Length: 277
Image (tube, one colour):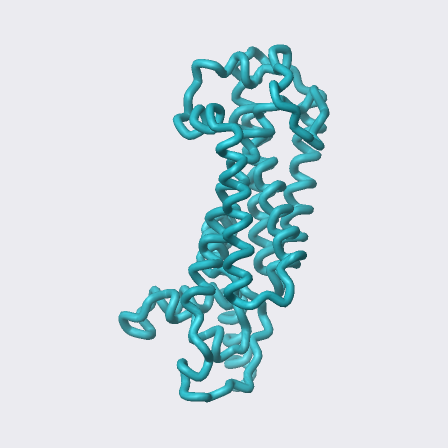
């Protein structure tokens, strides 16, 4: 079970990295990422239907640790799809307010499940037998609507742990978006009214790869990564929603963390060879 879930999680992470590389908007990335995770979760479900846990410790580990890692990703991308769907025609001030309202909604869920959230944050184990075994799964005192009603593949608190993880990711993402919105300067202040006629064509992940490479190489001296990205976005007439989030996606690419840089290097080398001929 452990080996299968690790292999499946690796495949899922590689799929998420590929989605980040091949999509040109945050909405496209969120939708494709959702389907990547959904596919992985269905495979996990099919496996568990045919699998017999060796003991209660293995069952607890699955419902407490393994399944929430998959389900939290699906919930996270679903939240981002919904956020982007309603995030239309907002001024910067309205957008920040909208994001803060969502953050408060996530925190309200933590407060509603305060005792379990404390248990989750402290990584407690003393009540695991009551919380994560299907045969002891209890009906909550307060009813909670839940789409995941398959009792063979779910426990109530496994779902709640997944929501804790998902909402924490949502809060981190939105806080990053708020920080970006607060730091955005008018284009005129960047270049005294200059308007670039160029348009970046290769998507957010490719631009972050490029910016990160320039930053770590010291191409712009002591400039911050944020400053480098702002200027690349300005020159390319292209907005990256969350460069730090995309960079963390790059870190989980096991096969090749910088495929775009590799691709353009190969393209340049091929072009140079042709020019020499």
